[in-house]
Figure 1 (cartoon, each protein chain N blue to C red):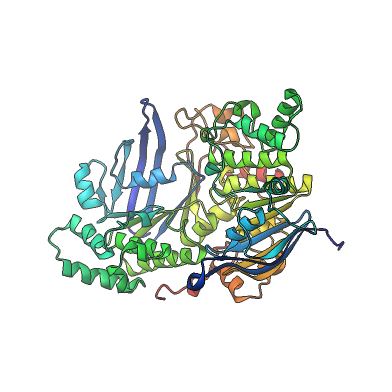
Figure 2 (spheres, rainbow over the protein chains, first blue to last red):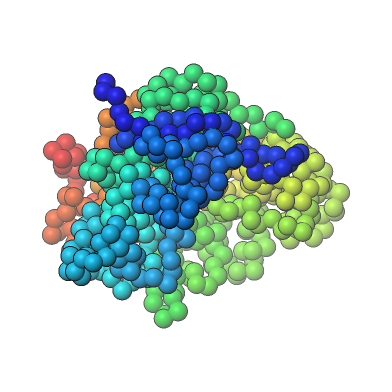
Length: 274
Length: 335
């Protein structure tokens, strides 16, 4: 296998909330190296620190300790200008599409913002329109039906697809998807996953999936990281981690997921416990 | 064949909007649940799963209205009853319902035991508090909840614990049938497993005689239920045993739905997920013919002309499509 270029790297990344006795290590010295064009999943239960890690990667919160390297260069986002520059390279889709939009902006305003951000501010309107239509057709939506609509007039699945259209316009190097499909049903989920995979194949971006759905992680990703109490307990290629897990925690997690070809073992949980 | 606990014949209910438009969210649904069996209902968001669950209780409040059909619980027809009678004698006693956010039903300023007292005394005011405490303590013990929970306030309990508390409370009067509407989707996998185990245990112990389980999570549904019903736009499109419906669906919609299952098992990476294009029809003006026609791959002009009836197969299965089973299987093979 050819050596892939590193896209996002973290060394000893730590986030501590609270002080003294109330100290809470949300993310505890994690190391990782995501290569370009790779899809990685970070899997963990509620409270394992996966969203905190995501926020650090996005630069929304400060790191307590450790360094993040973007394209082998140390990330420096102390100034607002540098932060904006960084955000042209990394974008995110969040769990709740309803709260991801500015409710006062119409859909076309949202897209125009994206085009302007990519430096297309001076383009003629026709060109912009063409780009917007292309982005919408990428996610199987009709732009003509969406102009002059407010976000609340759309369904959840449509909103989440629009988010992907936004990413298509922005073409960032890294996409961080924090539980992008947990609010939508299984059918639309397949559509959204297909689109994300297509986006990766077309543009070669790195996609970081944050999810608690281990089946989804296995389906989409090249690499899987299992997170527990702020630490990566197991990591490796998807096949290694999901089909041949080594750690007890991963085994337990896998065991708790209902399956269809194998027996679902209910005896591992004891309702009499605690 | 066991005793039929719940029988529903051609039940139709509607929502009436502000502009006096009728939305038929449950359209001529018939089903039967036998003693000791559990029935699963699958379908995408907005197909009428939850409305069906609400309609089955026989207690309607605006904007949901009853139109036609009958609900028979253990030989007793509850459809003609006065709403007050239904609330006093049927809900909780005969039929229990767990909504998705069951844990929100708890009053934050009330201890769990007072919540249970309210539930029991609403049906029989004569029961003393001591009796209720004994009953609750015994029931909680059996279902694996420590008796200390009874003296706690809801804020002191975790999400999974709250959910299990409400489930245990919902069956305290030993209803005949339990309707569980996404009881575990707000929980993580381990708590989900505990809830499922508890539901099974309740069936074994005879606290409930039969169960209807609603979720859009198909692997879970497959593991919990004996039979599965697939709903689309307010109608049942396929009905059969869990195994048949999941591994060998007949109706094109069910086929698409089962193709979107994701489970962490070997071989998943090679399968192609099927996504059904388009959106469900607007139920204010449902299409004349087959409701799935707009999104179906195998659509013919014939499909859109007349309403499609259920076809019953010998193997206790049924589906709603104008094609025969052989025609559909051939179409899937060529696809």
